[in-house]
Length: 242
Image (cartoon, rainbow, N blue to C red; front, top):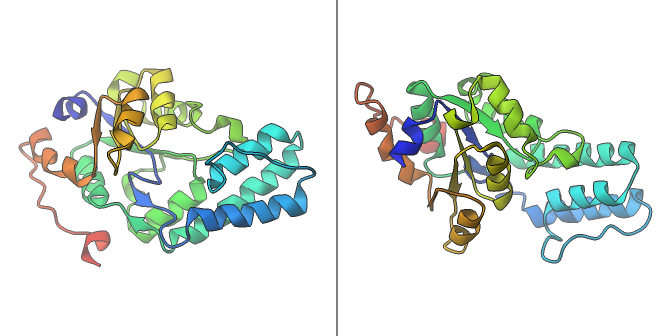
């Protein structure tokens, strides 16, 4: 893994998972239920999702867009999901080790960017709450009004590479889903998987992960090896101090 980081000059981070558990205090099934209610009131006909994806808000948004030609309606639904995601940021739980890793990488000169299917507004709200926004220098690339551009479409990664000036070979994507890996593979961006459970390991490797880590904390000790002249003392930020 140190070789992966030494070869990169920019780090692309998925948001929900590697950075935080967005729906920790406002669970995704509750958000999905609210969206299903919205669909029932506003969308003509039924919206079907893949089996097992009924409680996935993003799957509901994608399915509605694919099955309904009314772009204005889909845009309204995306805005409603954004509102729910912003609400969820108030009780989101920081991923253990993510804060230290982000601060340590930025201190060592890495260019950081968020590449996510969540809304940019929600990401900014969370990063503001934890005093992390300035470390990304505006490079937050979230969901667009058109759900077809969500990962595994590599659109947000393309935007991130453009914003950093890095080539695909100079980047490293860290994500926790097959969609993250597939998007990275389409651009030939190296992919590091983050999987909290053993069952995630084969899924992420099948999606192109070079390595899979069960915690972000596992990456923190590697920071000193990236720049011996800049030891990282692990000084806690708000996320670790509270």
